[in-house]
Every structure is written in structure tokens, then in C-alpha cells.
Image 1 (spheres, rainbow, N blue to C red):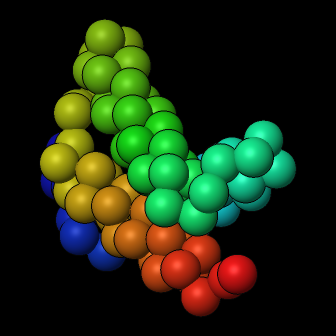
Image 2: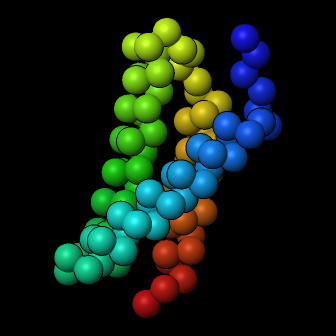
Image 3: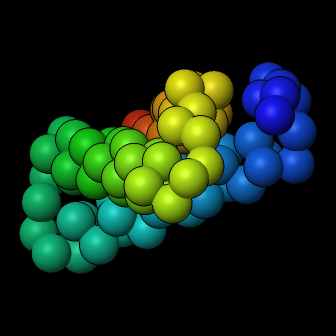
Length: 87
């Protein structure tokens, strides 16, 4: 089955990674982490979740998609750029 760069599931990967990163950043800041460590924790946590999802897909007979991971990365980067603009 083809794995296009632009498809509905790629938007889902982008927005879920954006949301997970944003939520994790807010949680880390609420827990008392400074801005930099909170960004690192949020980015690493969201990236780990995305990689886990691809391994989960593979274990259930679906393809491991590096394109999905790329869209996850774009979502994470967008959320971290937005977080960098906060105080």
C-alpha cells in the first residue's frame, strides 16, 4: 500500500504530536520545570510516543512509516516553536 507524504493520516500525526507536545510542556511547567527542561521533556516525550506508535503498528501487521515520523517531528517542532514564544 502506498504511503503518501500528504494524506489525512499525516494531518493526524501532525496534530496529535502538536497536542501531545503542548500538553507535556504545560504539565512540565506546572510541575515546576524551567522553560528549557520543559521543552526538552515535552519534545522527547512526544517523539517517544510517535516512535512507539509506529512499532505498535508494525507489530499489528501495518507498516512502520518514516513519513508518519516526519510529520510527528513537524508537529513537535511547531509546538516547541510556539512554546518558545511563551514566558
